[in-house]
Image (cartoon, rainbow, N blue to C red; front, top):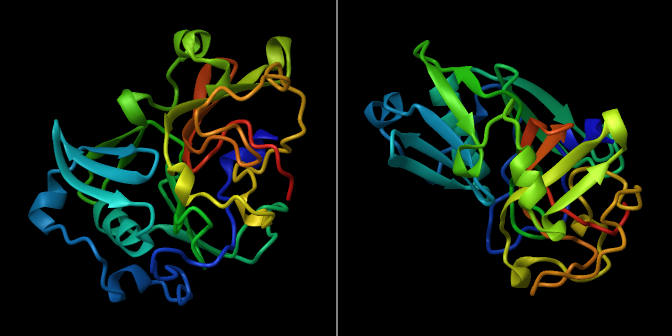
Length: 263
């Protein structure tokens, strides 16, 4: 179950909001350098980046408390280009629809140092994101050789123990899998993707991009709606942490909680 959640998964709905399909020609190793990104950051600014933060709808590059770039997940070109310049050349994998699981999209997956994985979708999803991002470590070595910290909102990192956060989070923001020593959690760190931007029809592209079977047993399965936006078939989307017991193993976005619909 968690193997799919840690993977790069998504949907193949038509682009919304005029977003260009980001991975349509990504069979060239230098695509991120040859396609003009929408967000421009100078080399001097990029060399100052010491933290990359994954938020619900964007990837934020920081130097101390200063924001160097806030890259929306609707902009795959800038996301891949800036990470290439910051972290060096990634490993790349081409995927077709269905590769790796029923909800897996077509596109190109880029992985930097086994720590940051970006799936550039061939066509943006129903909510408008053109990439799906997974953070798998707490830091990664940059192109200059310096370590770059990797975090989620509020500084949550892979390896952190989030027992207190799990205990205090409302049931609507967490899901547990398994029991006893094999228990794991998905904890919503920050909600995103406003309700009027989400698909409400029967298109399967709105399904759970974690790849988890929404019919899986968990102790919150009988909870009623607790969000003003409604706990519908798509759940509540945003950036989530996956845990082994209470230790964070993956931070990912988009990754909804309480998604009911099956691919």
